Length: 231
Image (tube, rainbow, N blue to C red):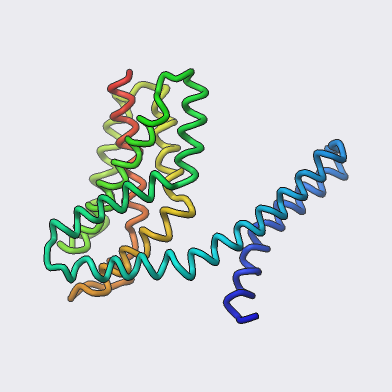
């Protein structure tokens, strides 16, 4: 077994074992849950560990290299419009496939008794992420400092917080969090690194990162806007 797989196994162990040990300690010290429930928890932890290992292996071997290749190839097409359009399309599609977004939409749909359609919430979050990914790539191309973009974005979020219906405000901030999931983050980071790596005068370290931070703002603004429409 090579070093990469061993490191991956260690990462999965550090991710799953601590919470499993804490729950086991609580089970024997305080909770005393039925044996069937506790066995289901142990099996679930085992399946989570195995699934996480397979997922991370797939990300490292397929998703990250593909994202970097796409990010490096799109600027070579010579059209900024095409680069931004494809960045928008990729942002939308990977958000629709993000499990965290689907979970949030299902929970909100059940809690609100159908007030906010599940598909409408997913669409609002996905379009917002697509716009922010395209904007983040444009920032790399133009060379705008990320601090200015972040200040402008969060100033807009702060302003919208005063006019968004109260029941949509916490949903909006959670929507920003769920987009930083295991599908979206690796691909967006790889896209930014690939784009910054082929542009002259751009640093992969200074310009390639920050896309996730910029992308998080989009769903917050999008859901706030959706709340004002439904509110």
